[in-house]
Image (cartoon, rainbow, N blue to C red; front, side, top):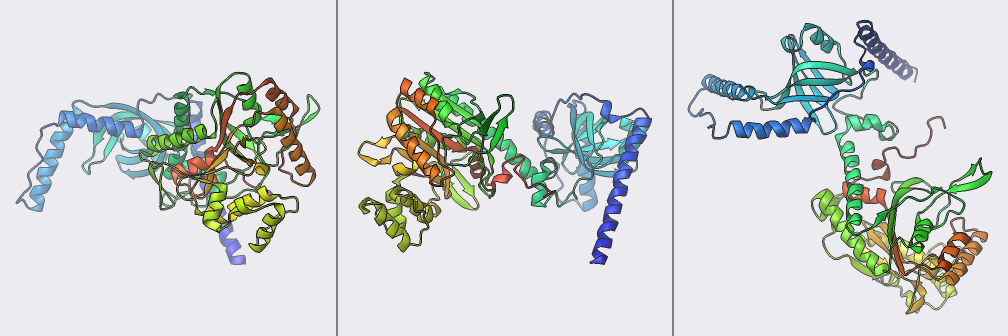
Length: 537
């Protein structure tokens, strides 16, 4: 143990010395009047991939019709001479019509070779090799470049060319250090592999792991395409309060805080539902919101206390309309973001191109557990079945609650391909319209893909008398110990009494959708800054 502590102490001493060297280099630059931190901007004309694409196109035009060198029958020395001559001729043609570029990014690799060196610059879109020659940038700049460190940020002006090995690169004519990195990046070939540190220091993760950066670029694209899809259906994006007096619309415990100016206790919202429905009452017929919601619950691979939810509401439609919209949107997103409706998650192909399967909750239980709850008479019979199948429940639970517990135990794990689960028990759906043909059930569905619940939708309850009764039942459930029960919301009831048209509504977990479309294994992989326990705890 003592030997290990001594080793760790030595490593820390070495790191401290390296950090000191970087600060000393910064001071030397500042003393020489070259402080990089006084630079306020740098004009980029290209990113790395833009340079490569433009050069390739330019090259194809200038060298069109030029034959490949014939080296058949030549010995190695002769082949080398022919290939060198061909390269020099091609290079001369391209250099006569150069592509000037100005890029900026972080230096991730450097190889110094006397009067000429190479480095690799990484920017938003990728990376590109830079050829740095003393005679091209000047002795003073070249000396500064040789003293630079991995992680420093440079602006580089020059022109594009192709090396003898075929790599499109930039021939630097001017180099400007824009930021001096005072910390040490993880070792290049292994990147930032410690999962906990990747989440805590996402900024380093984005530098070292291209795959991580691509996930978040794709996340942004997904949200952009959701907006495009809904815009095409004449939906209006809105914003509603995050701090609320009554956190309703979902079964979850809220975070609580205090509003000093009003001397009132308030909560962070757990859903977007009740305010969006108020807007439907107000005559905004198609509305949606993409926003953060907060639930005081545990953290696991699919749950984070702070997450992104999208809810939308459409007047004059029902849950059937929401099913059509959902299926169309998921297919649209797969095509736009992934380029195909057949996606892969954890090695399993999921087909979003086929019509989504549809099962009622009772049909699913009958299929996967062999029990027909349509034949179960009452709460006592349901609890007896739960006892026989070792399903844990609480005394307050009714038949509808037991049905849901059976579904969670036997069915969710079977739902890999897209499947709409419909017609839930009324007891677990306090904001949903009853089915006219069976008042013990409601017009509700959840979409399951890869065993996950991807969204939750209703034919929205717009009967204020029925809604008040269900709020009362929720209040009673809370008093009986259900901390996730809703509470009566008098202003919302007043809105329903003003009159809400028949409406379809739905909520989507955006983070889980991003996980699916990026083949990410944990919700923390798609949250830039996930909730983490403090290192001080």
